[in-house]
Image (tube, rainbow, N blue to C red):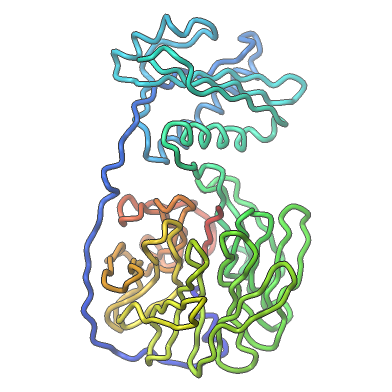
Length: 428
């Protein structure tokens, strides 16, 4: 469900046909380097403990999957094993196979406390350039493995990894739309709300401690916040009419909102420190779906002030709005963490399915990322700006969660779930 459908519960509007010139171009990932990494089997610190050996195998499977999903690495596994002591003895063989580094990992679980010791060995210099030690409850093997993956990405690329991130979304497998959450790879799906109503449009705070969402539980689209650390639900806005979260500012101090206050929807911003609310737009049309730029100096949003929904950009200082698109219909913008692009769902002609597009901040470039594959909506960026999660009906009539590269390549289903999935949001 897009925000347009939520708005339709209060508003009645039909899209107008508009002439438009669209520049469509598929762009590559920019030739990112693939790093040759040797990955010998992770080993148990005590080979006699079968349980530790199993944990080591599970950790290796998780880390391998993370590193492959990152697209930074050429993983090599056909080489000599590590015995836990003599790294120099196996390094020449790994070097001949083309590896520049070897990841060496030992795992144990004394008294149900997981311990992972990891070293990254440079086969050319003979130096250990990365060393980490992780210790936590054995039940958190996935979390520890994701941390190791992200630490390795950071050490070799200087960029933050995304293996620790999560995706929130709405799903109707129980006959009602409820809020769910999953790890970035589609695993560890869990249901967060049980309202037996319509819950949708979740939005993570930057620290992932809070999740804003809209619920119709009390027969009005009210805005609430889930405290994910303590399991509490906090009211944010329960005015008559629409109360919908847009997005948090990068520092978490501001929350964009769409409020209708029994009139046309407009944009507001809530100060998360003192709870004060400031109106950003005052327009007779519907303004909705606000998303902050990375520096919080601008807001992208949807407005039908020109007759049909288009993407606009609002300067937070001057309060001036600039139109960026000229399609038949646009919805659900999401500003890239790197700042150059705004992803959105749109269509060129009234009979087209919705597809995912990018528009640059000048409005001079539009790139189409999906085509001829069902209806594609609600894009949300990974925190490194390299991937997008979105909903698509390409393989079934129901919308499902898909992930693709930021140039539209390599689309794949995130997770198979009963029912339809809607309005995903990718955490930092």
